[in-house]
Image 1 (spheres, rainbow, N blue to C red):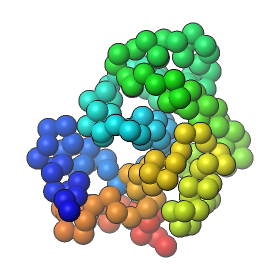
Image 2 (image 1 turned 90 degrees about the vertical axis):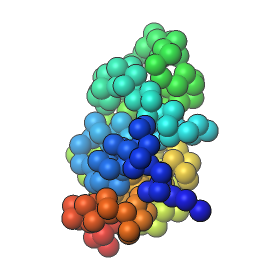
Image 3 (image 1 turned 120 degrees about the horizontal axis):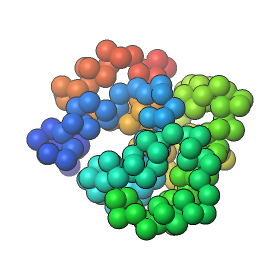
Image 4 (image 1 turned 45 degrees about the vertical axis):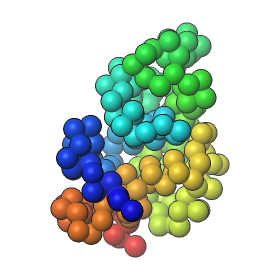
Length: 178
């Protein structure tokens, strides 16, 4: 079975994401929110589709500013549902706004989304899914697993023989700290 590390490095859509982002730890709440929204939007679609529309997502969701997205009203949701630059799915659009509001709540108790993640780390993937389902919407096992792997909280983003693997290890990602 081939892995992302087999085809992504030479694929024009995936190469940069694979080499520079996937699996690297993220501490910035805006970037964490971006990754969560992108993972939610990938559900039922290919990652290539999401990466192709990434600039559209950035424009549509105010460069993933949590406070701005949390303040979106019905007219913003309508604008998003009419925007061909993103994935126009009502459940996914609503999840972005609802989850931005949840991140604001998390900030009030933990200081940041990153600190909230740290507070729960390390727990097994199955427990992560339960924690996410209690706090967010439109988050199933695949979405949570990919989000955590892509942000350095769970191992598995790259095979050990992938050149990117050692670069990630050098950052001391959370999964390595268990």
